[in-house]
Length: 224
Image (cartoon, rainbow, N blue to C red; front, side):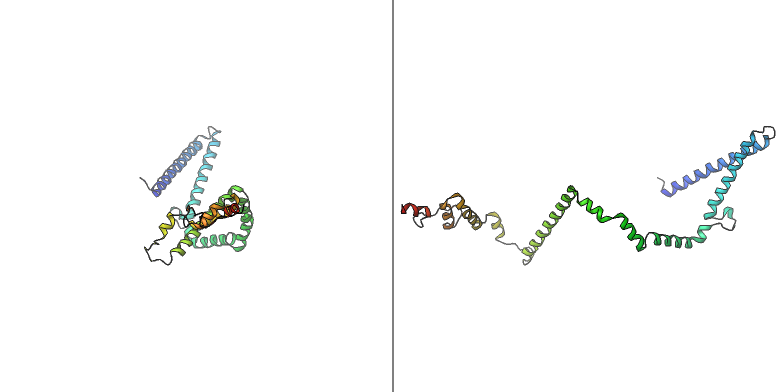
């Protein structure tokens, strides 16, 4: 498989072959027109056309070759322009880019023209974009807070050490918290026995002894 340089070289040779063949064709037509023009005057147009084509081809060839090399190896003035002046050309190009694209004034002018703040504001005003960005920040904040909490909770432990009560706390619910929630909800339902049972029992679901501590309802019944 040919490399990129080899393909370019082959393409350049093919283009040079076509250019040389066309130049030889124009030269032959010019010669024929010049020979038969006295007997056939309309051939004047053919002669003029071929002559102009040859002059243009030679001028273009000389101009392109003179930029990089000495044509035909002749050290003529104003030839091999780029190799002799590449340092000055590079410095001029660098000065042009710096003064027109990289100067503070040019950068500020282009930023002001682009108006990035207004563009970002318009993007955030769209509900879909705002929801998407808010979701990203919420997930990031949740992850950061979870990582900080894990480091604070496990910071004093030795590597590989685990809390022996951690598994037990995960397996059973928080019973005191459950009792407090049910007691707080008791006045709404009017069930005093449930609240009394939660306060008197040591476990969730333990039924208290009615003879040990009468509830409010039993006191009202006895008063009657």
